[in-house]
Length: 368
Image (cartoon, rainbow, N blue to C red; front, side, top):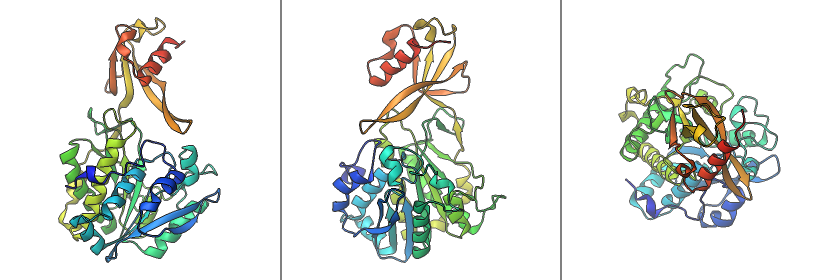
């Protein structure tokens, strides 16, 4: 497995990643010339970069949702690797032609929102393509005629890998291409490639890979591209313990990207089994960011014995993402888990981190 520490792009970090940051700190390091595939609603040029000269064409795009930046960081790491003297990198580039769109939704990235400047979710605009960003991606897709597409996203911290107390740190989906969810040859190829990536990830994060529900939605980009006969894979970067900046998760996405490209380059996709795809547990929404027991110890307005489930809202403040706690649920919370558990005896149990202090303040100020 590749030594990730050699290729992490340290100039890009944290949750707030914008096109301006990439332009100022990273694009000058790319030896491939930018290809501008279109403009955003606000007129930002959307760049793509091409690597390699092989027969297998791969198209990948990140930050279709502006507030989903982990895969963008991993893409920067991947580019760093592909431009290195590593033997595997040279092999991949000899067999693959890779086109990368680091940020498809620069307007959304700038203000840290899922939607674009017209308040449209680009991942629900694949059929009508009302937005310039959607049109730019489809035009690029038609120009390249890729054999594989990687659709790169982030997922919320609430997802577990199946009905377990393990977070879905990475999730995948081979989208359906019809309402019946038939396993077409296209879907099958995407499933097998996911299995290849999952094998490597299980060595790094055993039990922390999930699979998304495959209900068909013709408005979703992955489903739409899958329908054209192009194997398309949804990547979802999720939570790793105490990694709210998602610097560890970016590493696992990096390894998945490299394994996926290596499997394509080696023409080994068909050596894997779709049966193993369905062994990957489906995502469940079983996590809170914090679960507090005995909250009545810091505020008597909570009933004795009640557990409080708290989830963080991500808010952009002064070019930094702040995690603001909100009470999501109160009760027995049976069957649910917390990324952090606080068994409250008194206020000292909350620790001294900024997140802990905000949680304590939230509970103390709670009113029925």
